[in-house]
Image (cartoon, rainbow, N blue to C red; front, top):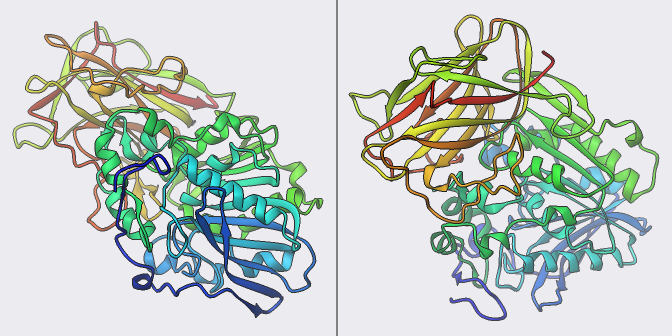
Length: 555
């Protein structure tokens, strides 16, 4: 269906029906469970005439409660068998009850503490009236209407909080910017805030697996849903459409407990940290871990932290929140092992940005300038006569922490092409010569330190938004590679936090395809690029001062 004045997005029939996904047509009713009343299938109409379908879990005493909302496309009826869907996620079954829905809070934990939980199917999904749109201004307005509905119920104390992982956080960024009067606190837990830069186009390179996959998770409906794949094809650059799917972070003023990870590179890491950095909330806290996102959300110690936050702002109880550091980040040593440091802000103010200069002749990175020019070549799509990648390495003489944003400045050319896709990765090598593994993308245990991407034709920077540590691409037009000489490009490398002992090395990889590969249907960021042609050349030294700029703490 084509866009209309009332609904400005193209739509398509859903991939599945609610019934095919174990849904049951709504039947408003009240049920009981130990210590709680459950109001099933509550229909709430929004200002636009769409509806939300919600289940409400509340204390059986009937006393007004603080309200927590989980706004989800995954189905309020659908328990969260995360360990079944993603068996290597690390989320243990004993950490959640059978009432827990996917990526949302557990009523069995929250209701006895004096909370009402509203688990909502967003408009247009499942049996809620739509059409459905995703990460849109219209969806945010619908969400704001639900917040105001929940904040004015007899069973509500008038203070509403938001929580949930991934899409349940994407929606938090959007609605918080509308400042609904009854919204008192948000708990964004790993969710993108800029759909174009963080999901659809990494460095301008189209991500090719997420939209087709997510239909199966978001797409159960009785009516039309927004056609995300069509929109992705029709909007290759950052235009007004994509701007409408980026959160107005500076408009967010509500208290926020933001949780990010170093491990969701290519989906949530960048957007969550940008969310914390840019929101205007006077009361905000950041916790960054190096583990898997679903496991951390449900880990009992982290649920207690969520409770401390909401007890303070929704129940007005003394909870120990006053002693929290503003920022706490994990410095990883290897998979599953790390230690935390506290900071005053993000990025950590004490970090220094230091340039390592690349030498293609030796494969080294060093602090001093490289005077002699040299080149290293690889083949973008694979060729038996050229290497798959170029590798540079720097060995640390002393222990250091690399924590924050990194960036690469390269001089590249592709003699057989007018454009090229560049994939870069950072790895840790220990003193024994072994690559050190880290958690990656919520399921894997052999990940990198950090990743970056760039389609060279998208190299133009947004000078107003870029900082000394964060190059932000404009994505407004395509600029072909310069003819006759190398093209200078600057590549954002996503934030990370890693501890290096004396003798450990930082490894910088440059290649023409994804750094990590896993068999389908395992979910991770994929870029099935088709623009690379022939050899790709990296120039270093002399006129072509190639650099890796890294954030150093403690040396």
